[in-house]
Image (cartoon, rainbow, N blue to C red; front, side, top):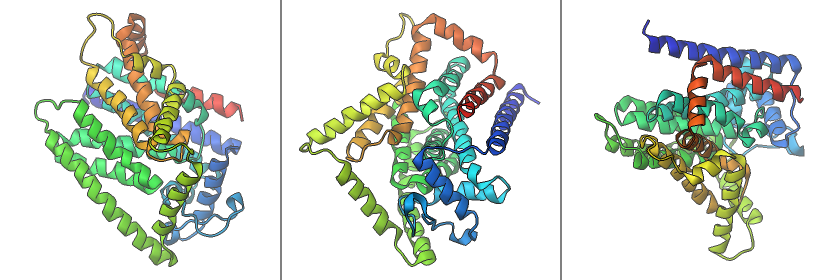
Length: 385
């Protein structure tokens, strides 16, 4: 077996082992959360698993937050995965946390896979260590929220578009990631094609690649959005007799109106952008500050610059898009936190020789080291209760 195939097999085995241990411990400890959103989603997903699969498109509140009736705040995607795992034997109360852990790992690995398209292996793999230390990662280490599933789908879509520049069939990878993000979080999945566009603008294609293929892929994702929304609405109406989008769009507009500032336009949008920039600086610290500096040491290799353009451009685009909506929340910025972390890590490697040596030393633990590091951080969070 070639060494690359052995390395990939070992990588898969390492992360599967870490996830298996984490899942067993979640079930054995009957882990619960005090986070209100997570607690609500656990209730919904565990109850949905008891219903026929034909009704999974239409979850209910089932008493969560003292509400009854159809749950139409988001599409049903975040609940279907946990419900399916429950059918496979994982207790419903823990299945949502397991999906969160799985998509957390997928996010980390896909970001590193994107970096590896441009950077030396030791540099590309270092974010797999540093991203786990972001302040936001500590907050969301074990949750049942939408953020990691959404982010996993978004970055899979970007990776699929990058690979599509060289081979058409990779469009289906981009499509699967985008559809998953769309099914989980609706309109916020639009960050996927947006970040893919930033990638095409920031990263030149190599020999044999074609940016045109990537742009065609992004355009197709736009068409898929419309077709998927129509199909989802028809399926929801068929299952419930109610419209999903009449309620969903109304909720988004009402939330933006109620939570928006009273500042006049466009000052209110500028304030939103400043608010989000502050969140990126804090929740992706210290790498966000290092990325903002963006200064390499004299004579540093110019190869990482397209990666930095992508990370910084992705952060800025995410801030600008979210600033248009007056409903503000830290969790909306998750992809920007991880882009800032991944970009700042590479700046640190290119700026300080000590960090570069550290990246090379840590790469000696590939592929088991990052999985063990992830499991150790998971155990520390689990020990806190």
